[in-house]
Amino acid sequence: MELKFAQSILLGFGLKESIVTIKKVESGLINSTFVLNSKTNSYILQAINTNIFPNYEKGLENILTVGNWLKSKNYSYSFPLPINGQYLKVENEVWRLMPYVKNSMSYNRVSSLNQVKSAANCLGEFYHHLSDFNTEILSITLPNFHNGNSITKKFEEALLNCDKERLLLTKSLTNEIVKELPILKKWDEVCNSLPIRVVHYDTKINNFLFDKKTDEVLALIDLDTLMPGCVLSDIGDMIRTYSNPLGEESKEIEKVICNMEVINTIIQAFTNKAALQKEEIENLFFGGMAITLMQSVRFLTDYLNRDSYYKTSYKDQNLVRVKNQWALYKSLRNNLKPPS
Ligand code: GN1
Ligand code: MG
Image (cartoon, rainbow, N blue to C red; front, side, top):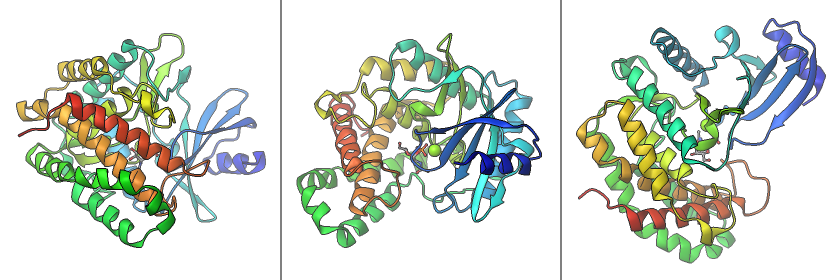
């Protein structure tokens, strides 16, 4: 990104500081993210992928409504809101600017149980403060986002219409994954039987910001998917990403084995803070397993569709992601029993 362009966006948000440096943030598979530094302040500038988030205006309303609620509840973490409560449209692109959370950093994989506990505490407090929030005032900005049936259908369509070379290359893996699809059906049944809550829907490890000095969580960020849903989506994505010792991009597939100590820590810390119902607690393990399978199917669908959804930086990256998630799923399945 050119300095001149970033400067004009900043001005569009009414800020007259001079930008000194711009750094592209490489994590995140959907939006494009940059850190802007002026002499006195730092900002996060993001271009929203409007193909994937066509309802971004409603999404912004969700973010502001939940942000204001949490402010009134003394939530102990940062919840960085878009500056001016607005997005800026420039030549068909939609931009938002946010304050940079000072002294923060993120991880793609876990390196201590303290990080796990700190993140689960943060999510637990989020659920605690939002337990009496009326979810009906939020918009469903991504209909069927974690719906097992809809994800299965998209996968089956891809199997019919996809790149035949890629299909051939993934034949045995695809067959194995197809055999597990009933788990996604079970997922829908379980989720439909649980209370509707405010769900972040993207609680993967690199969406938690940690304090560079203390290694405690400062914020849970990336709020485009904030909408009504079921707690298993969030605890499931935490289990999926925190229990994976190497992170979702690792090519060392044989080393991708879930860490049960991490999973038990997540569940214990989370349930200590968030007052959940018995049926929710009973299904937290299952949530991790089902979300990991769902992510295997989503990456495989995108691989078959020639990488049209997730950003990739090398050939067959989505296939590596599928293999990684599938290995994690199998190790979870060995440890966790789906509900009967
Ligand atoms: C996407 O944008 P990002 O990287 O935070 C995806 C998540 C997946 C994740 C996998 C809207 O999240 O659902 O779990 O990639 N977001 C959307 O890394 O599809
Ligand atoms: Mg996201």
